[in-house]
Structure formats: structure tokens, C-alpha cells
Image 1 (tube, one colour):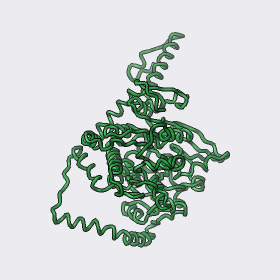
Image 2 (cartoon, one colour; image 1 turned 180 degrees about the vertical axis):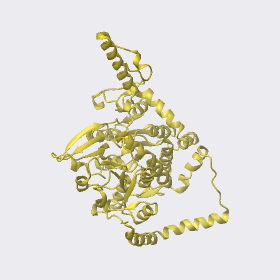
Image 3 (cartoon, one colour; image 1 turned 60 degrees about the vertical axis):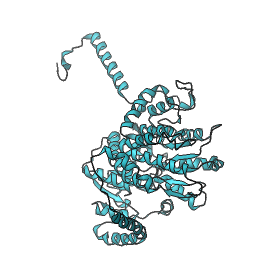
Image 4 (cartoon, one colour; image 1 turned 90 degrees about the vertical axis):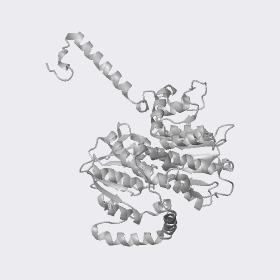
Length: 518
């Protein structure tokens, strides 16, 4: 007997007919679950996209994706994203008549998601030709890539690429007969690195680079310092619109989503250490604290370290808490933050993940040794098992957690995408000599375009200043830069005084100091 939910007890199978009925029910249930699953997560077709010959409905085959048949599904995702990206849609509407990117040939290497698709279609509407690859082997939405390919874009990306596939896709974007890029839109610096390494002569025609992530910005500053930067570069990561919105609010929401989807962890009472208290770290800490987690912070910048203390977090060195914490999150954009020594000392079941762009923050390579066993327990979740039975839970193989394992808020990404588009327009149309072979921040007047584009989405009013007040404001802004060095010295002294409150500023290794640009 048994009766519960939905009349379940009214069906009493008998003999072989009953067995057949149960089998059919199970079959239908499995079919339903399969159809309900996202196309992106399905991996039933093991054939590499590189071995397939695919064409869109117009007969064009200049792309390499998972499955062109998913295009309709991807198109619906793009249309939904457009509704949450008012700033980018406003830019498209405002500038498509002028075609400020007419003649631009943009090669891009970013996360290929519905939000990126809206950006690519905006660039196309503004006159640009685009070829695109993914900057992360796990973040591509296969259905969105299919929709872009169906729309005529040359896209080379799919979820679950190998390392060889990753570089092959980038090369296919760059190395094409009869087409040479004159603008670069990068996220992490891999595309820029590849062109420098394989096709340095291309920089004779490239007008500029737009870089989104802190990792890529570090690499650009290193090139500039060594005198090897051949073209002007725009640092989008440090623009106000990117720092104060994308890095903070996007990560504040997506960190919880990524951890929940992959581990089903309960946050209340968990001890978490967040490495880095920049805008990404601030967002992660705020979200975890709100969920009841006990949050520790490691930080090498004295200003950010002081902010962490003022926000109520305990500042520590990683080796002080590594044995006791339940979750380790890296948010630095640096390298070798969590090395093998720390991984060996972690408690059984510790969750390790990265919210910075680069996969070098966690020393995953040191875990690929004969004495350790890797066990894939679900998509993007690996258990690394030590000889004594201890295991850690590694998410996305140390790559970016939110875009590899979950999603990100479209509304916030609209701000970053608009900033990227404006940076491309600025560099492409700048008269010769305005920008030298160096790294620049987006002019503030360009960034301010994002504000009125988004104002209708919220019910608020920004105050205006009088002419006298504006003169005072400009004086304040000018004087702020003169006070930066003094502010750093004061924060170092304050952090030293706060040692009595068990707060300590972390020390960067020599390699990390080289990677970190002040």
C-alpha cells in the first residue's frame, strides 16, 4: 500500500506487466530529466568539435563549436540577456547610425556567455567584424556559441576544451587567410600573449588592446615595463565602472551560487578564508558573512588590509588558519597563493576554489602526482585524495568558479560590457599620437556614459553640484593622487598597531611581488 503524493499508491503492478509498467515509468522519467537538463551540461557526444564539419543555415562553416543544432535555444538566452543589459542596448541604439567601429576587425578572447553575445552583436551593429575564442575552458555556453555561429560570427569555443583545444581555438581566430585583426579585446591576456609569441608582425596594424581582468592587466604592465608593449592598451579592470560594480556585486552574488551548485554546502558556521580583499574579495566576504560564515582574510596591500579590519573581518596569514578552515577562496589575480604546502595541511573535506581569473592562484599542477588520487564526483568537482585517506574538494580545477560552475548577474555585466565597447571605440577612433605604447585607464568622461544609460532601471536621483562646488570637487580629485603615498604609509602604521587585535598583513613572495603591479 502506500499512498502518498499525487496518488502514488493507487498503482499496484502485478507480475511481468507490473515490471514492464515500472520500466516504462523509469524510462519516461529519465527522458524527462535529460530534456530538462541544460544543453551546456550535456556531454553525450564525445566527438571533438575539431573533428566535425558543421555549417550554419547559410552554408557558412567558419566556426568550431559543440553543436550548431542548439542555436535556437541559445538565441532565446541571448534575448533574455538583452532585457537585463539596458546600458549596452542603449549604446547600440545610440551609435549604430554613426558606425563608430566601421572597418574595425576585433579579435576577442573572453567568456562566451549570453552576455558576451549581446556585446558581440552590439560591436557588429556598430560596424565591427568579430572573431572570438573563449578565455576559459569551462565557461562557454555551448548553446550561445551555436546561436552566434548561426548568426554569422566566427566563434571557436566549447565547454570542456582541453589545453591544446584552448590554444588551437585562439590560433584559429588569429591565423586566417585574408583577415587580420586591428583591435584586441582580451580577458586574462592569453590572446595578447599568443599574438606576441606567434604573430608579432600583426601588431603593425593593431590599433589597441582592451583588457578586462586584473591578471591580463598585470601582464600588460610587465610588457610595458620591459619596453615590449607595441600598441596602446586600455585597462578596463581598474575603471570605476568595473571595480565598483562587476568586481564587487557580481562576485557577491555568484560566489554563493557557485559553491551551492557544486557542493551543496551550508554556509552557517563554516570557517572560510578569503585570500585577497580587493573588490572581488570584498564581495565574497560580504556574501559569506551575511550567510553566517566565520570569515578570515589574507591581504598584502595595507590599505585593503585595513579595510578588511574596519569591515569586521580578522586579518591573518594563511598558514595560521589553513588547518582549521572549511573553505579556501582565492581572489588575488596573483600566482602561487595556495601552494602544495598549504594543500597538504588542509583538513579532510576542505573546499578549495578560485574567484580570480587565472588558474595559477592555486597550485593545481603540484597535485598531479602519482601518490595522489583524483576522483571526479560531479561536473567541475574533483576529490583529491591523499595516501592517508584525507581528501580536499577542488572546484573547476582551480579556474574561475562562478563562470565555470554557475552563472553571473546579467544586469551587472551590462556595465562591464558597455565599458569594453566604449574602450574599443575610444582606441579605434583616437587620433594618432593621443595614446602612446602604454597602459591607460578609460577616460572618466567615457565611463560616465554608463550611468545615464542605467538610470531608468532604478528609482533614484543623483544630486547635481553648483559651479562653485564643481571647482572644489576638481581640487579634491586632484589632491587625492598627491595623498596616495602618505595614505599607504599611514595604513602600514595602523596595521602594525592593530597586531594587538590579532590582525596581520600577509607577506607576498618574491614571485608574487613581481606579478603584483602597484
